[in-house]
Amino acid sequence: MHIPEGYLSPSTCLTLGAAMLPVWYRATAAVKTGLEAARAPFLAMGAVFSFLIMMFNIPIPDGTTAHAAGGVLLAIVLGPWPAVIAVSVALLIQALFFGDGGVLAFGANAFNLAFIMPFAGYHTYRLLAGGSPPASRRRLIAAGLGAYVGLNLGALAAAIEFGLQPLLFTAADGTPLYCPYGLEVAIPAMLIPHLTLAGVAEATVTALALKYILKTSPDIVAAGDGR
Amino acid sequence: MTPLPTWLATGETGPLLTAERRWRRADYLTKTLADIQKIMAEDILQTGVAARPGFLQALEPRVKTVAAATLLIAVALAAGIPALAAFHCLLFLAALASGLGPKPYLIRTWLPALVFAGFAVLPAIFSWVTPGHPVLVVYDGADWHIGPFALPAQLAVTRQGLTAAAMVLLRAAASLGIVALLVKTTRWPALTKALQALGMPAVFVLVLELAYRYLFLFLLLLADYLLGRRSRLVGAEPALAKLEWVGGTLAGFLRLAGEYSKEIAAAMQARGFGGEARPAPAGRPGVREACLAVAVALIFVSLVGGKYLGQIGGL
Image 1 (tube, one colour):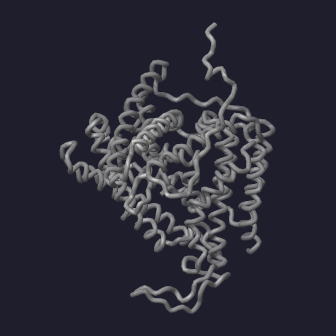
Image 2: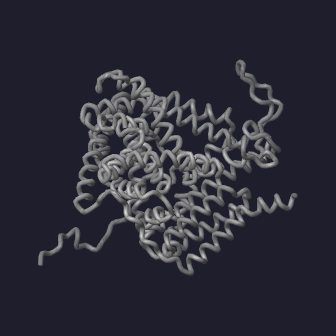
Image 3: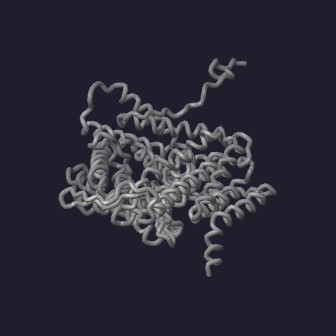
């Protein structure tokens, strides 16, 4: 789901990067009001954890594997604002060092994976979990559904960004200048694998990871809850 | 004086770690281990290239970063295949002059470009996705129906489709090349300080530096953990057991990351850190940097200017 360079026009990248500026500002401000000196290593370790989640090849039902995104798990555990910074830093390291996702497209990737996914997933989780006890089945199902919703909304946002390119940026002879797939191709191409395979794997891993986190480190989740 | 231990006294060094490449389908443990191995190999290569003398290594990091950002924008705005192809030649020459080597450079630019951008854009060459002037007709006049679904009467490779796919591929490879040259020829602390000097928030830079520093420690721990799991596995593993293991591992690593963050914070505070990131010391650009600025301006005009000059000429 990392958008590579060349698929989005510079103006799309600029718009989405600009849309992320207030989010990053708010996330940084939210972090600054925390424990100050102790927060930087906390966020850095959050970014490392985010990177580790994305490293994992998750087995999916067709016999192959998919990479986890982990944005919703981070939002549940650390809180949505720290998750914005943690996922953004992990995405930046991936783009700069490993060519995974474009540098110009960093704002777009951060918008989809570090903003839409954690926030949508986190609020779905909070809504469905309600006031249920920490280790209850309802809370774990809520986390799984939150991850499913978050991942698919992130994928939908990426599909819309792709699909708008041929509508907005085409040469005089009809040649698409950036992503050539319109909304009618981009949306099903992105959503079908995410709704059927990747989303289910992400939901299962998020619910199972939260189950073990609540068993071994309930203090961490309690600290992140409601931030 | 106490003699040095044998492993420290030896001057011999082993061959650099290289990423293992295999084409057959591997399980999730092997794939994750291979990914970690690839990242480690990448870091070793980068440390080696950034430390050796070379054309791009000699440039001031802030100027180099601004130049890279300008070139990324130019590549994104470029609309001509010949100009982009010529720019690729320049990037290749810069990689050679900086000691990156042809094979590592091509693997880091064209391989991901083909895998991530090339395959995905391949269907766009056909008339079903990109209508236009047919260059190669695959079939014509067909009347194929599968239930309510009907295939179009003609399938052809179109000029517009080929151009669109080539543009996406060339842009993706050029962008990867620019970023690879910047990152491989600049030491990580110098790059983060350059980003800070160019306006990235200090908190963000601090988190970036810390994350990068500890990332490799955690990757080594994860690799050991994965290897341990793979070594102990006998027979087929049920699908849910795999996911259970991944979930449990993530929980364990979160606990570890949390404990590390407390220890790092305590260590930083003990050394006088009060929560504020220090501003980066400014370097002094010289003649080389001025030459780079002129070269970047010329490249920018060559890549982008033609499109607008054409528009002006058409008025």
